[in-house]
Image (cartoon, rainbow, N blue to C red; front, side, top):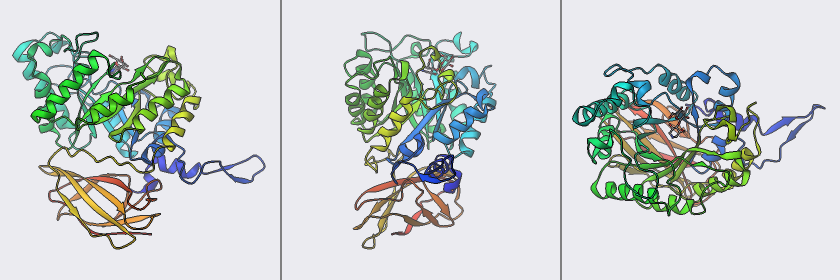
Length: 450
Ligand code: 9MR
């Protein structure tokens, strides 16, 4: 992938000048480092900015132009839920989900799969099942759907909304829960086997307040899973907020979960009336937590929202940026320039290192490999001088073929910065990644910069 195929970058480059009525070309007020789209500004600190997408809206030109310009992660709003993907038992239907996946991948965006197991939007046949037959049907569903999208999904919401509201801190009753309390961990293990390259997340609402019983219940589950080696990589905080925005301790919640060894993300953000200060506070809570890897709003325009009467999103019904948009963009541009977040390997990582020439850079490769493919994450660290650009030369394993790459442009063996991640102060790092078919580990030949 080249930088020109990344929409957020094209837009960022195009937006650095504007033509006024008299024909003069003037520079905007943005500084060289202030990106002008949500995706590009989030990428400056190694994060993504995403949105929920509905397949039937992809024919709406206003919708897709905002989508392609602003966002770097896509969550299908309804199209990957079990009633959509397995409407009859054993008969899978991927048309609408595929439309979203194909649009996102061809525009250089990544995908959050939503979801593999949820007590709501079960197809009719699943709603009427219980016990062992339901357990087996659920696991087959996970294997089939995660297998269909294997290699294309950044993160799966493996299990959605399994905890009870109110003060119990326990599980929500459902036919899935009644198959046995271990259903969640079995779902995660099954998803890992079906798509070893995807991060596996638990996703829920009303778990943003650290003092809430529901938050504590989910925290204890994640703590237990990590202590027993259940494969969980991330927790999604839906962040459907009222007009006041996030609870004051939201950042504490994010930090405490991250300290368990998982990434955290804001997965369905919307705020009643979209107060700019509430949006800014929410954004900063994520930016202040190194393992908060991205933010997704639950729709693009107010008219796209499931709570459209509350005008909770960043664009109005005409697709015009609201004040909340600017507050989020400014908060993202105020983040430290480079993330200090280590990525979470989903399998045992292997690492190769090159010695940095003085003043240039070093590069390390972390691998998440499965039978027949891998995702490589390459960390580029500036040496003894600040860099404005860098190029890493990699040797790919024989027969390996790159299918997708992000935060980088590449040609042959050379992998170079894109517009937003070339500048690295001494000792700072940035990361890019790519997915490939084949096996083996890429090796770093050199890292050069200027
Ligand atoms: O936005 C979704 C809406 O179009 C659906 O009708 C609804 C069905 O339950 O689901 C909405 O999305 C939900 C998401 O999947 C899970 N968290 C809560 C979201 C808002 O209800």
